[in-house]
Structure formats: structure tokens, C-alpha cells
Image (cartoon, rainbow, N blue to C red):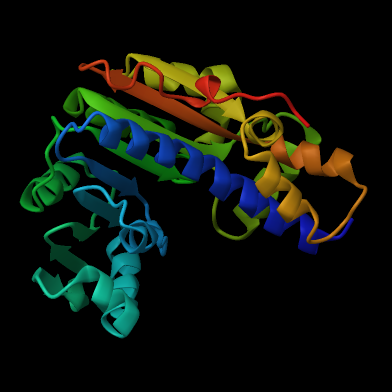
Length: 285
């Protein structure tokens, strides 16, 4: 099988699935004219979502990115040396410390924090103007799975306690019990990236329960293969599939079945009553 096809298309599935939930959040909050909104990206890495949303004119009131200091230092340095990024940030930079990996503006914050330190996380967000009571979209894209189970549970519990009107979207691996899952775990561990949390969340139901037992009202979990078949835009999928034709569909589906998107919801205002992938299904083509 041509790996150059599998993995770029896999990245498309991942990006498209997460963008689907993000678009849903933005449409719901904008349509209800609910006032300020915010996005909190945990373990944001070098993600560029905020810049894309800002360029499209659909960014939330504030966008917070959190990651290890060694990551935010590199990201801050890149941003300081790119004129296109500076223009999007705007002239009103309230705080900028490239050496510490910290940037804070009127609508964007890059914060150096270890997510395992909940006190430090709360202090950093408070100092940057984070408002727990307004509609919030939380993203954890392949983040919690690298933490010890008690650490990720504590983080979700903390967020669930703090955020009465929020959706939290988690993307990570499942099914460590089969041959593919075992090889996946060995490969990542050999690179120094052990999937510490995967044994405690091996199934879709385990992902749901992690939310439900940690202060989230509702939760749904869907594997990426199902998302690709039933939830992504058919026209966009045809465009991607035309890039290169292949016939090893069995391996493709197996890979997709080992990743999932889980959505936790706290809905104090009723705004997110219809939120979730289950409300966006279609017939496979």
C-alpha cells in the first residue's frame, strides 16, 4: 500500500473531523448572538487554527493556546519572525516574552504551562483573562493519551467543574488490544512517546465514561472510520480521494478504526443541545 496516500488522507480525516466540531461550535455561538466566546487549545503545539480563523474573520473573542514552555518558546520565536503572523496578531500586543514563550494580545494568548499542574494552568488562564462562564470550546488533540490516566482525569474534572457552558473535543487512539494497536503502541514508545493513557481508555465507551465520571453532563465518542463514512462532506472527500487512487481499503479502514473523536458537553444554557457528530450524520456514498 502506498503510505504516501494513507497518512496524508488520514491527516485530512483528522483535520476535517475536528474542524467539523469547531465549525459547529462557532455557528451555534454566533447564531445565538451569545456575546463573547473562547477557545482553549490544550497541548496546542504548532497548530495554526487561530491564524486561519482570524484570516477568515470567524475567530472567537479570545483564543488560548497552552503547551510546555519548550514548545511555546519555539512557537513564539517563529511568530516574532513572520510578518504575516504579526499582521494577524495586530499591533496591540499587551504582553510578549519570547524567552518565556508567552504572548498575550486582546484576542490571542500563548501560555507556557505544564497541563499536569492544574494550579499553574488556572493561574495562567486567569492572568490572561479567561472567562469560565462564557461559551467555551476546548480541544485536546492527541494530548491526554500521553498523560498518566489519573492526570488526564484530573484535568478533565477540573475543566468540567470550571466550565458550565462548554464542549470539550478529544482526539486520540483506541483499541490497544489487537495486533495493530499493539504495534502502534510499540512504535510510539520506541520514539520516546509512550501512550500512557491508552490502556485506561481502550474503547469508545471508556472515552465516554471518562467524561461522564469527571463532571461532564453528556458525552459521545465516534471512531474516525465512522466519521469519514457518515459525517464528512462528500464533495470534499471525492476531491481528496482523486489525489491518488488505491485499492487497499482494508488497511485504510483498520487505521481509521484505531482513532476516535470524543465530545464532552456541559450545557447550562441549552445552547449545545444539538451539538455533536450524532446530529450531523449522513448516508455513506
